[in-house]
Length: 162
Image 1 (tube, rainbow, N blue to C red):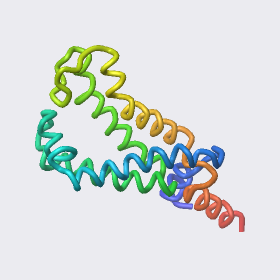
Image 2: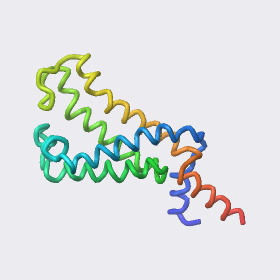
Image 3: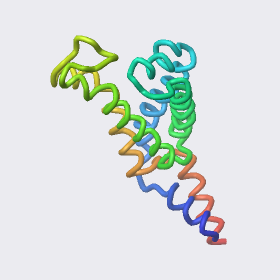
Image 4: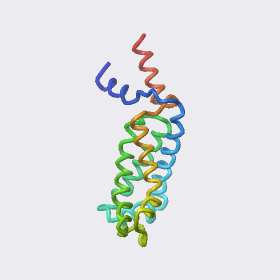
């Protein structure tokens, strides 16, 4: 077994129950469709939103974020390389919270004028926080029994034993 095979086996290994599919479904669907919307409505949800938030090179980072959300969302949905796909989404959600939501606490959020304080922060951050927690969960436990990761890992184990 090569070092790459060992690394992939560890990445795909999971002892989590099949019910993890519910978390994968929620997290994957939200990322996948949010990524698509960055291309369908770039002025509001893609490049324009990144520009309004003050993110440098919004014409680059807006579509890049959309591509990552579509690709990682799809991988999470089918349970393939789930832990690997969760990492960029964790970075994505931490960035979204730091860049667009934390400023609500002191009333200086460019995307949400007039919003300020703890309660507005919690309200506006609820999806980002849920996606962050879901992605962290998937990074920790893996894709679960009903996933391509589990099937590929079972195949690897079976092949090694024969």
